Image (cartoon, rainbow, N blue to C red; front, side, top):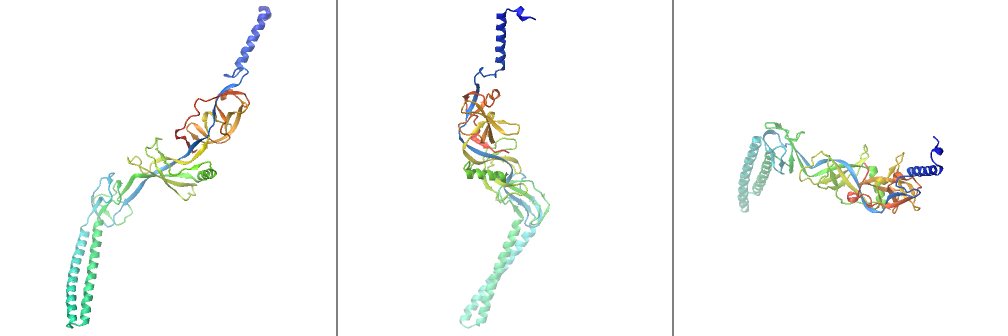
Length: 393
């Protein structure tokens, strides 16, 4: 088709110019005025205190555990508790057949009475002999023999008393009581069963569940890194801060725990050491053996820099990068180091400084070196709950 013949020359020139302008407008990045800087949103980094936390896996264990075993031989006559119930310290749990032990106690009681009677007779004889010795009616030898017999009778009374107390203790062992207060489990014996003194299998187990222990482990390498940061002043050591507990389903346990101690040795097979947390358990929510996670405060970074996650990208090698606005108003690519998250932000370890303007919106429209027009975000990043930094798992 011959456009020159169809359209007049002036009209054809105007159509070509309009088409060229429309094509140039389509090729310009969206949001960027033709020939002007791109519009981006930035967050200016400001230092702020951040608590560094570590989420550690752990298991719960009872605060006190008592395995109930018999201290004498006997047949179980009666079980005196309800399985799974709360028991008090000193509460009777089992009654053994004690007829033999009662007989032995009665025998010891009679022997004590006999010894006391013999001592009384020896005492009277010694006193009369002493009076007669003053008048030389009896010899000095007879007086000494009478006094010695009295002392021997006193010793016999003491031995009989000890024997009676011993049989009383044995008789008392026939009534088995709880050594601690807590919740008792199932009974391993029934009425009529024969039990022996100090047997290997416990008759029952009593556990104190308020409070409970949460035993967690931490990598020794991470501990060394934290200590270096504290020594360098990058972190302030946490002391006495509460430990948050997360249940197996991810929900927050309503009562915070307290770090009781850190083990002084490292397990050579795992390269980790143990931490023990004491946690209140008034409602018996935590049971021994449950899997939980403990959020432990490792320290506070007083001059931390937080960057919204939208401002951090990953290169093909996995390194973290950020686009910032340099002093000439152009976009610049920075390699940064981040390791921990604080809500929906990254905790910066290196590569950025206070006052840097990190681009969080409009990244798809710019390239390094392009001029940009920056506007500050309406909210300075997303606020993390309690400004706590979670250590990487």
